[in-house]
Amino acid sequence: MRTSQTTFARHNTIMQHPLALALTLALGAVPLSGEAATISVTSAGDAGGCTVRQAIVSMNTGAVSGGCVAGGTFGSSDTINFDSGIFPTGNTNAITLGDSANNQLSITAANLTIDASANGNVTIQRSSTATNAFGIIYDSAAAGDSLTLNSLTLSNGKVAAFVQGGGIRIRYANLTLTNCTLSGNSAQYSGGGIYSQSGSVTLTNSTLSGNSAQSGGGIHSNTGKVYLTNSTLSGNSASNDGGGIYSGYGKVYLTNSTLSGNSAQYGGGIYFHSGQVTLTNSTLSGNSAQYGSGIYSRINAVKVINSIVAGNTNSGDIYPGVTTDSAGNFIGGNPQLGVLANNGGPTQTMLPQTGSPVIDAIACTAAPATDQRGISRPQGTACDIGAVEVAVNVTPKAVPTPTLDRWALLLLGGVLAGLGLACVRRQHDG
Image (cartoon, rainbow, N blue to C red):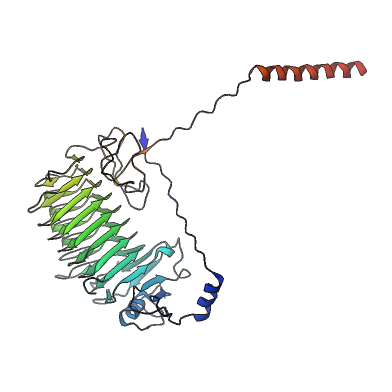
């Protein structure tokens, strides 16, 4: 029998040369020529001191403001991070944006990174009691620019009618999320979690859950490419198209990813108009729609490799069908998966249960080296279909019962005989 017991560990080692450290302390906030600018957020509020808002304004304008201090030179792959004394690892680190109209964090800086990986995670949120509608992040940088978010949670963003992107609205630049969560964000129009006009959207080890919109409850991408790796979209909804993902004329690539519990009228998991969708070792199960509960395509077929598209409700799993070069899949029927849960790794997954037909069902020639959780493939005689590779129970080797060979017995007998003779002599002498 195979189970999913796995231990995950992270090791971070930082070494600094004494001279480099001394120079850093001596120079303080003096910009260093040739280095990208770095600003550390030192306030957990939305006003006063170096807030995340003022750090972004500083990056946009290339000049520090609001008590922020910058190191390096503005304009070349700049980074905002978070002071570990204010946002310590292990704490619930949250920044609540002020409740005023259109109060999203507006980014115009090119190639900006906002990184909370040294803090474990930092949440940026709209208050649950806010009366004004506003998203969390709006990036209007140019095509070819980028926004990178690491270890952030964006929650409860809300935008009004005909405005896109409850969590993130990014028009032309490329968006990359690693170890991030977008939850409970909403848009009346498009992109409850993320709206992208033409840039690429790349998610790794990330989760989009409970986001909603008219189209693209989790992600709405018009013409760009969407890449999901080791990520989960769950519980997102769209009143029209694409509960998990809406793609207009772009391309969608899923690798080691799970879409579950998403809902829409068309395409509970994924809706795409005339682009391309490719699934590799991914799982779409438990999604619902009136048409195409798993995937709905207006025109093109879907390329599916080593993936599960089954157990979706109310309509067919894939509409209209899969490409001729699709292979190694479990489509339709009962894959016997567990509910979406924490089975190890950075995101929730659906673990195949004992006796599932997806276990050891395919050759590993086209499979990624690890599954969604980081478990190596294969674990059994062959690879499992879908995003999760069920780990093999390792039975400890039996410890042999100690035995005495002939020479050991002779030696023991001699020792015992010697002890007996010693006792006789002691009795005689006494």
